[in-house]
Image 1 (tube, one colour):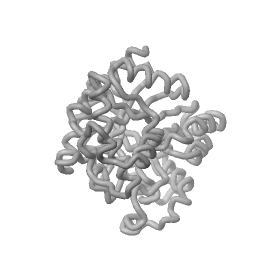
Image 2: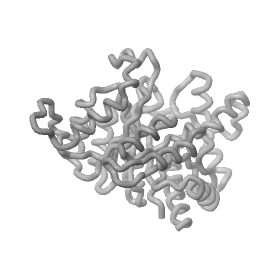
Image 3: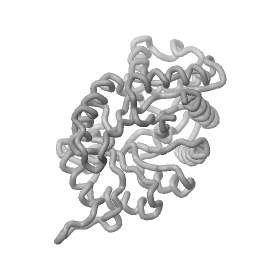
Length: 328
């Protein structure tokens, strides 16, 4: 069976609090660990009232402490917001505390708006230095060179596995050039998925890894019935509608009829963003994920299941794992 992992943004549900979101994240991580998922990744976002994982390394530490075998990591850290040395120290500390269980995915976007980027004390042009910053970070996590004057302690010699994340062709090219594993954010940016996977595999040259390792993100909304799955999916659909409206907020409660709360043009745009994934009962999810695996041939799947009710979200991941096992 293809390895499957979980992407959790620690969503804050309407009617809930940040504390609820973080509690739900820990509960979900323990649940999916028992199901046999491979990784549990959290993402860095700022100034978003619907996402509780802004202090990503802190949440990773709490999730790792609450689990035993699950790989826990960042999907990702937005490196332009940080000095590479700081990230090396943070993730070197995590790797020291939880050896062999920490992943570090790196993104180039700021993970926020321009005003918040200024509040983070980062220059918007910092993203132009992303390749150089990745190389610097890899150096801090590797073995110290003779005479090296600046060292990450903890961090040095931990060799935390580093991934390049992307939603365009840039990340695919960089990951291939550096010989790093690559994860594509097709759960919200599907357009370049096929081309990015092809470029990554065609241009890969051995580096920190000897073979290309491509992971694609996919949405999944699984339930006992197709109708229930579509109902649960409406929360994420409303969230993406709100992105297009410029009215981000907490994860909305599900609705029976999306047309009653959103204009058709916004629904169409949101549907396009969410087009890579599977929705329905166990058989439908198996069919949908199977099509994605056959078409893009990833080495691993990263599943995102944004559902308002935490118990329904846990059930979605349960059914998704059953569906993947059905595929064999």
